[in-house]
Length: 428
Image (tube, rainbow, N blue to C red):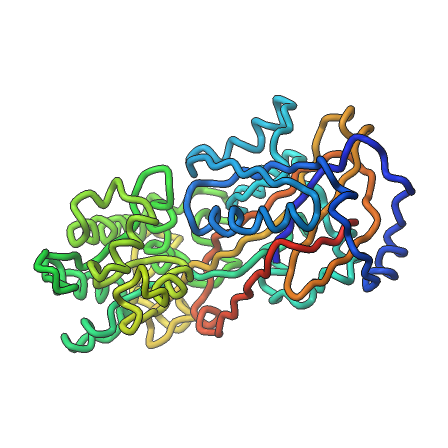
C-alpha cells in the first residue's frame, strides 16, 4: 500500500466535501476517475537516493500520470540531507514537496512540531483503506504517536543477516546465533576466493558510510546487548531519565564487534553505502552481510545475482551477556534478566516499516485556494473516486521506522505485500 498526497488545481471543488460519516457509508462505491478531471495537476516527491525506493516510483509514475492526469515529479537528495528537506520546505513556506519518503523515527520531531496531521478520524471513516488488514504491530504501534495515528504503514521489514549456504555448509558452520559466531565465520572466509574469479573476497560486508545507514548497522549490533525486555524498554534511552544508553559496557562491546567486522570487510567499507554492499554480496564476494528484505528479491534475479541458489538468511545475532542498566556493566543472561532469550541468548532484531502521514501546511493562502486529495494506491483496487476534501494544501509523507523487536516476534513469518501499478486512487 502506498499513500501519496496531491493538491488540486486552484479552482475550488464543484461540491462541498462529504462529512466523515457519508464518506464511510459510500466508501465501497466506485466511480471511474477520468484523467481530464485532474489535468494540469502535478505533485513533487522528495526521497533519498537509492534504487530500492526511487526505481519503483520512477517506473510507475508515467502510468499514474496517464490514468489520473497527475504528473509526478521525483526529487532525489542524499540521505544525510533528507531530515531537513521537509521542515525547511515548511518553515520557509516554499511548499515544493507534496510527498516525502523518510524514516519515521523522525516522526516524533515532526509531530511534536505540528507538522503532521492527525489521521485518526480519517482512518476510522475510511472503510476502503482496510485498516484492520494491516498487521497489529505496524497498525497500532508503529503508526501512532502519543496515542494518535499520524502515519499509514506502507510495508514491514526486518534487518537480517544473509549468508552463503554453500560456504557455511562446506565449512561446517551453522548460521551465526551470536555476534561472536558472526565474527568467527567472517574471519574464516575473509581473503578466500568466494566466487571463483581468482580474487580474494570478504568475510563480512556491511554498509558503513557516514551519513547513510551506518548508525542503523551499529545499533543492530548493540540492541542485543542493551534491550532485554522488549520494545517497551527501548534500546536508545533510559525511559525514566532519557539518558542515552551509550556510556556503558554494552555499547563498548558493540563498538568493538563493529570495529572487528571492518577488519573482515572490503578495505573501503567505511565509505561504502548500501547499494554498493549489495552488489558485492550478490556477485558472491561476501560470506555474510546485514541488510533488509530486499536481498531476497534481488538475489532471485539471475541477471544481477550469482547466489540465487545459495542464499541463506537468519535473524540478527544475539548475545549471552547483556546490560545491567543499574550498574552499566555486562552480566550473564538469566531467565529473569532475558525473558525473551532462547538458550540464554538475548535477541532484539531490527524491525522496520515504511508508513505515510499527512503534513499540515501553514500556507493559509494555499488553503483558501486549493483542495487536497489523498490518493491511496493498493492492490487490487479498481478505478474509484471519492469527494475531495477542500481543507487546504498538505504534505503527504511515506516513511519507515526502526525499532527493536524481541525474537519471539521476529520468529513469526513476515508476509510482505506487493504494490500494483500506481494506477487508481481514492480521494477523500
